[in-house]
Length: 182
Image (tube, rainbow, N blue to C red; front, top):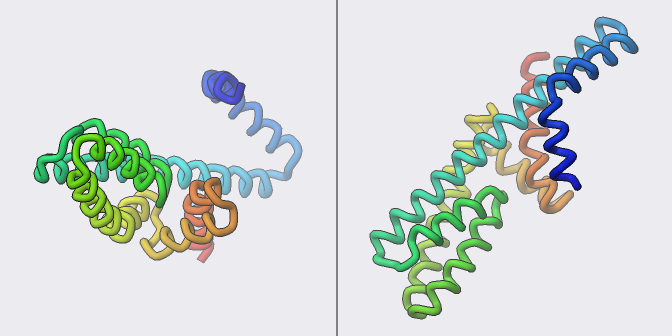
């Protein structure tokens, strides 16, 4: 039902946007309506840039995983890398979950291949999670890398899975508004 609702919302987004804007300017003073619109546009940009950064980061991780697995001579490199890429869309834990599934697949061939892959994945995840992710998502959202890491950690600790997704764009929105204000 949520998927169908999303499709309807996407198909009529221009009409909904115009109606919302009319309502805001009808019920609020022009100064307050301008402020609401500014915050709305800033939040939209932050969320859009965050999700774009997530996709770029997932693509990078999947590509690095494929290259590494191919160099190590491991089987199912493309399939496992695609799973890792899709899993990387979930911040911090998604790639590990996909990696464990990949290791299980490799375990059916050889325990040594599964262990080799797990060691490689842990090293790759450390590089990706601590260096690449904060830089890529930080560049997309305009946040310093340390704020990206802090937002993901605080969001995960406070609201779990949903917090990991929402806190980076939320912090980016607040950061942008504060920077514009100052």
